[in-house]
Image (tube, rainbow, N blue to C red; front, side, top):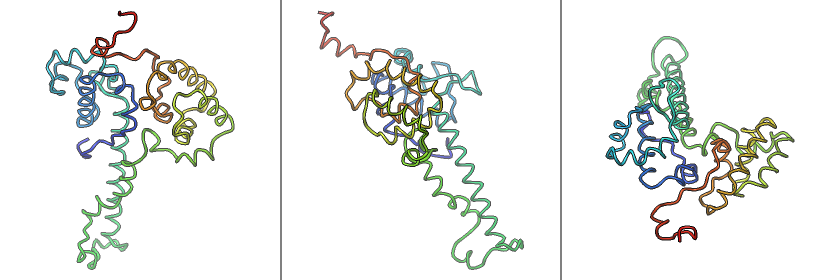
Length: 266
């Protein structure tokens, strides 16, 4: 999105993401470069691997070695199936485009109202002009505060939802009971209020609750092997629908394997 020169990058989501934890260094670098290329290109990048290698500034051989892991996080673009996208980044891009359009429209309406000064005569207020006001400059500044709220909002999908305290008040009794059961088995006991808010947004039915519980149990053995700082917070896990992720053993670095062989390798 070239109208917005910076990405609303949520560091907590990235530090706890499976992409960062499971990928090797070269894979992470290529993955991030392609995400930023998506941002610059409005959410779609070519599917041709040679073009992607050039976009990531790596050799074809380096790209070929990393791509099997990196491509797990890219899918065909819903509107341009011949191109690739990352669904989370595409969602952020579309929301930012909506905010930008709403900001422009709101500013334009306010500028027109001031321009006509409520009389419809097309004349500006002389005092306002003397002080440097002009309708064209008002368009951009009028709703800057509203746009900043969106850009600087909390991590993940929570930026469009009520704060955790409001979620606590509005939760149904069955949701509260479901959350207590889930929180008891979840693999990181941090950020309970944010997790509860995300839980109530994501879980409306008992069927979804059962899916989340099953996914949590399936991923627990692998997650519990990680240090706590590498486990996702409950809100991040729920906002990313991580219960749908397949449970798998964490990948080992071949260099570490050589330095510290397992008993089976000795």
